[in-house]
Image 1 (cartoon, rainbow, N blue to C red):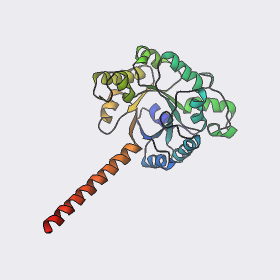
Image 2: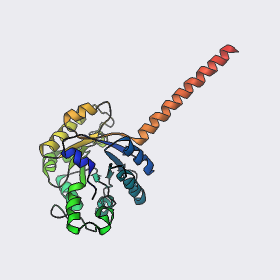
Image 3: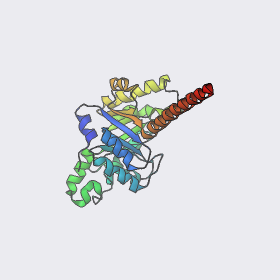
Image 4: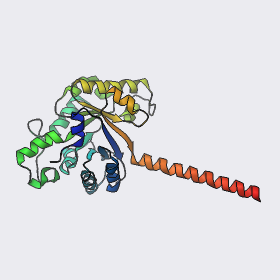
Amino acid sequence: MRESRVLKKLRAGETVSCFKINLADARVAELAAISGFDCVWIDQEHIGQDWSVVAANVWATKAHDTDILVRVPRGGYSDYIKPLELDATGILVPHLMSLEDARKVVKTTRFHPIGRRPIDGGNADGGYTTIDFNDYLQQANEQRFVVLQIEDTEPLDELEAIAALEGYDMLFFGPGDFSQSIGAPGRWTHPKITETRKRVAEAAIRHGKYAGTVGGPGNADELIAMGYRFISMGADVVGIKNYCQDLVRAFTKSAENTQKTSYLES
């Protein structure tokens, strides 16, 4: 089984970069991988791509030794393990609501002796049965990461117990939905968001987990100082949107200047 680049760097005390992909074409993920990101994040919670699209993104990133994180929809166990069986390197479970919820995720996504993930072994992650059965279980537990997303107020009362739970790797703070849950959508400097972002990182570190979140060039230093070691630094749709808007503004300015010059000359 391919070694996880994310886990290798995190276990060495390094910080990991990630890039979110909304577009389905696997060439976008490959471009992000070629550019040097440690991890690419694709989304099944909000996008719901065909499984063949997920598989193509897995192949595109593996070709460049880049990890791929799949945010799964909240559904049955198959929704959680299918990305792993396609050989995604990690899964992100959104809207983790309680300690009991976290226990169920661990039980579903980890093999014995940690959990009771259903076993196949005949898929990409098991090398299509070429990996020894017991080696497959051990390697999957050691080289595939499970991330729990804290993005609601409900789990905060049990945050310490959730952080202490064995069997998963990372707590990921999501400020977007969290801003909704506190009744302040989009108010990114709200004190409760700042407080909870720090609290999630501190709880994760205190209990031997990694802390992850979304960020960007403007606050990466602050997040790293706070203890975050996995930072999703941007998204394809944001980059394309910004680039297109810059081009349109430049074109509009040039066109207006040309029209003014023509008017004056006439």
